[in-house]
Length: 127
Image (cartoon, rainbow, N blue to C red; front, side, top):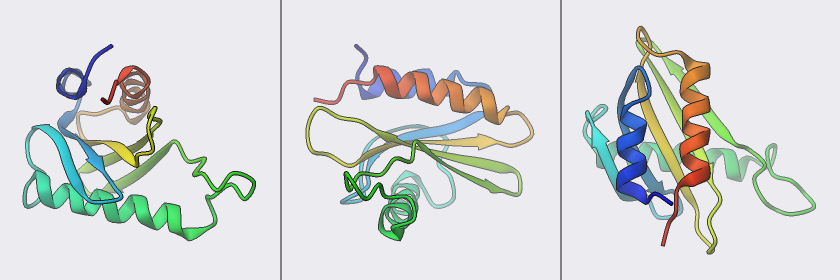
């Protein structure tokens, strides 16, 4: 089972991906990053990713009342020239981790990127 570094390298192979990172969204901690830095760097992107994840979790609209868990798989943000994909990861320990992809909109296929992100997330092992 691949770890963070291997999965991030695989993410760069998805057509149109400019950069990727793994972020603990409860703390904003950047656990790993590869590729180009969006905006003001990978740490700033981790902080922005954290804010987006928290907004979804804290909204109540997307929280399953019976479990208190977020049934959201992905957050897709479209911007001029780019896509931003955030995938919530299931872990074997109590953790709030997401896999983030930054894509060039002119080169990426959103469906292909989402399927690639899903495949990587399913195989990622966090220890």
